[in-house]
Length: 523
Image 1 (cartoon, rainbow, N blue to C red):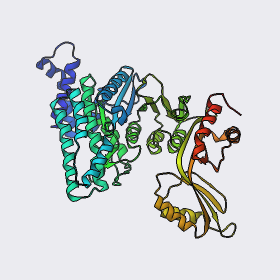
Image 2: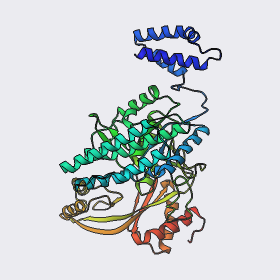
Image 3: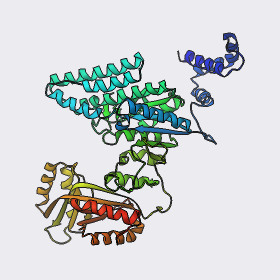
């Protein structure tokens, strides 16, 4: 069967490029030598011949001296795919990008709008004995109707929604929703979304095919709710795109989800859709990974607070990771790792303003082009001051502190320490009961002070120039009577963080921004 399919493809290809005749007789004579080659290849299992033939057909590109197009992945989140109008806008954008010289090997899609939240709520209601996904059906059916999708696409989406409803009825009956079941439940959003987006792309003349992510190699462990990609996933992704997916066909891939070795659906946790995009882009070593959002790239500060925030042209991988960790809406640090491994640039662009250049995240050689790259913050954190009650220099103080934090599954944001004292912060993601248990244990050998309603203000900067940055920052803090309760310089060498009270964070950011970005410094 493989030989026949391959030979037929070869015949079709030869017929399409012939300028003289398309008759069966002519085509048969034209490809007869190739057909013999195919038969010999099948007998000898000569995979090298397959690879050579595919290269000639541009199925894979290797060592090309000149690239007229840029191979990219493009990721779109739920807000970009909120309804039929937004899907129409995104698909038209993809077509325009192709005309501009980009070749999207994969378009990674989140669920439409708030579908993931709706599915989570449906799971909660099912546990209470009620099953209703009418709103989710309406959202997807409206898109199918708006685009007048063919019966095949309608049947696929309807079958997925029916399966989702059946699953919820099962939850209602057994009164249980395990992490494994929850991952399958939320997967229906992405799986419906990609089928509608692919259908719309085909309607407007862009060849496309929907794929569940595991069909293109996204293989994970079995840590449901926060699964990690397996090492073999990289080769599986590369193989899928080199040998199974034609470069002329846009693969519309589900973000956020994967599959474990037992064939069970998993979710990749926070930043999962971004990770899907970077994993595919890095494994295939594409020219660029594009993440489309609703702002003109990474900004110098939160535009909701600082109206004069400006786009940042480029940042390093390390700077982007720190920005994301300390509250900026950028790629999650975990999603950055595949791109860093293969040095594939990540471009953050605005789907509402595609002509804007956006921000490129890439490897930086040499010093940063500016004193401060961006300002970000994390609000609602707790500050713990821990001082040993034992003798000065008592052995093992810090190790004991971190053992007790580990036992209570607590993750530290920012830390400053001396030989017998340590100050550290917890964000809102940490459970209050775990913090209380840890404080109780720490109090057995230390004086512990807990301070609520604090915020971390982070300057993304080159710490080689920290003296200049700190001189300006502390002049601002002094002028506006902003009390810094803790300061930490990150090991990554690209951030300086300050802990201040929540009520002072806005004033601190706006005045620092004036100094570092607006030439309107008050000091």
